[in-house]
Length: 72
Figure 1 (cartoon, helix red, strand yellow):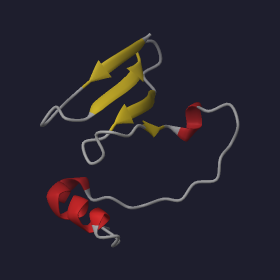
Figure 2 (cartoon, rainbow, N blue to C red):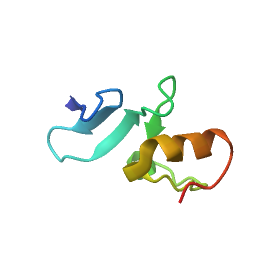
Figure 3 (spheres, rainbow, N blue to C red):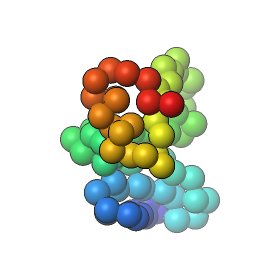
């Protein structure tokens, strides 16, 4: 029941459930060779490290992420 959704540049591939609407995972524009998983969709809880990312100023935030700086 996964459905793909792309917006803006179309580079990111968001996959969500066509029944309930939850975004289960996506292939981010910032890391096109990786997948981001919604931890709420996992059977077991996981410890997470959260990196802030300012989507309004995507280019600056991506550069800061690449440089290892906080973007938010």
